[in-house]
Amino acid sequence: MGLRKWMPLTALVLSVFIFNMSEFMPIGILTSIADDFGISESSAGMIISFYAWAVAIISLPMMLLFRNMEYRKLMLLMVAIFASFQIMAGLSTDYWMLLAARLGVAFAHSVFWSIVTPMAVRSVEPVYRRLAISGISAGTAVAMVLGLPLGRIVGLSLGWRASFLSIALISIAVLLLLAFFLPKMENPGTFTLKRLPDIIGNKVLLGIYVMLALFVTGHYTGYSYIEPFLLLAGQSETMITIVLSVIGAAGILAGYLFTKGYDRSKAGFMVLAVAGPALSLLLLLPSSGSASVLIVLSLFWGMCVTLFNMTFQNELIRVAVDDGVTIANSLFSGIYNLGIALGSMFGGIVTDSMGVQDIGLVGGAFAVMAVIVLLVYVLPSIRRTWS
Image 1 (cartoon, one colour):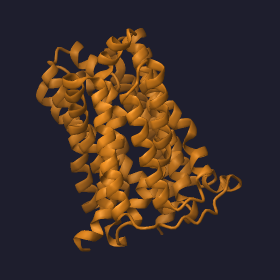
Image 2 (cartoon, rainbow, N blue to C red; image 1 turned 180 degrees about the horizontal axis):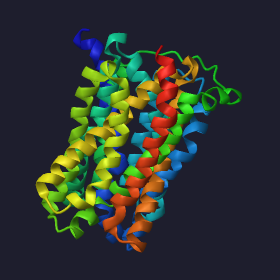
Image 3 (cartoon, helix red, strand yellow; image 1 turned 135 degrees about the vertical axis):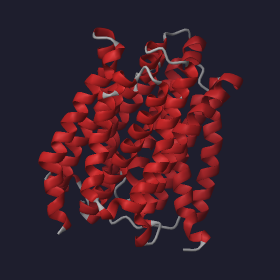
Image 4 (cartoon, helix red, strand yellow; image 1 turned 60 degrees about the vertical axis):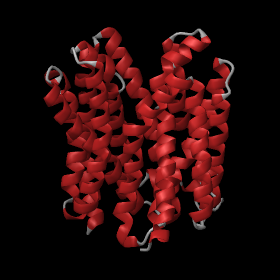
């Protein structure tokens, strides 16, 4: 493939970067938002939890609503909506205006994540399918490593509104790039609500969805409260930043391993992708006192979480009916955000009732249940589709 043929995928990866940066950036500027509006940090944090709940609830309905729209037009529309609501967030004069802007971004997010991976796969030749999926995950990893700190730096230097306006400017640039390079991708538009049992009744997909809910809930039970956990363990602010950066950067390593080795050992990748984070969560407390052990554990944890996303999105695209891939992916995205919301909620409950030191234990329990679902149900079902 020549350089120009790679540009559609490059533009999609950049769009993944800005959508991920936008989703998690408020974590780094919550205090500034709370101080500006005269509200508590927990109230300001509702813009994060409401966002996740909104995506979880509307992902499937929105994809059914837009099922007839050609994919290029749909992508351009979602990025344009995304940019518009980022501007609204940057111009917010009160908390409710900001919350409304974030819900508007969540609307764009719900459709964007339903179509971006299938579009990435279709934008390249079949032999580069694994690389396309890895590229989407790389956009997420870079957003976690560079996007969040950059958003925080801008917010602290120029005010939190500047963080949202900066994303708006970048997203407009990405929109122009997509408009110029992204080819038309026909949408068959034949999948309707009546055919939803084609997805729910698919044993492989159903198993993936159940496992996904448990896995993401477990991961975010621990990850959402990793900062206070590490502070309690006596780690410095610098060390916490390093841990978070390593978890994100590990996604790049995961992308390389997935591209090179997935076809050689599919079952091995699946077990590693689910069991690795479960083990990491259970080892979180015993490892918390050693900086060097924490870094190694964070690298392993982040790599396995990214492998999970790549591995099971790849299988989802492979086993879903052709005209139902984006619908199946919208369910994946919705359940993923449900897991984020539930994980954050359970992490808060654990922190208040048991103590933040136990987030790894509780999160690990959910992840272990995901491992059981994988071994007992998902893996045997998937194996039958390989023959």
